[in-house]
Length: 206
View (tube, rainbow, N blue to C red):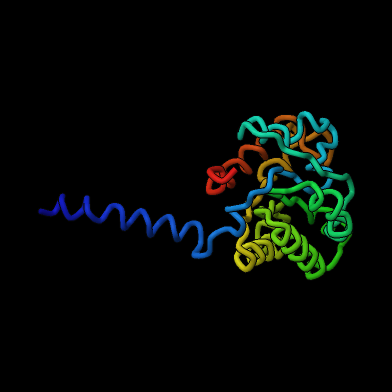
């Protein structure tokens, strides 16, 4: 009888583990009738050093088999992103928006509270337009990273997704960068793989 009981418990255990991993709140706007997938960010999104055709956005497009609009602008802070989101994203009928901002805020020592407030406002605008929101995080400290913790809280509060540490192993490996900051083609491939993995719960809705 014990094997039978175990078999019966498998669906329950699976549901419990899946629910714990994804959080109790579903992602907002999975029923969106909009059309476009958009990467919205700074120089990493823009593909500085490799070109847009070799950026993680282009690699992600190949992985999911759908077009991805690259709306990256080098040097953008979270405030810059918030200022241009109307034309760059909201007017392009977005279905899914992948937000990669905050690195320039960190480099310019903008208070983390302002950065998080801007990211939160961007997520809200994206969702108000009927799109799913995904936040990409770059962890700047292995201990007590306020940015990533803040991104996670925003994702939980707004029913969005947060993909952790997309630059893991890249920031301090010169073989994966074209300069002191920007990934090379191989580095962008690694980012695309991480984003693709993070997007798994949403792929069925694209």
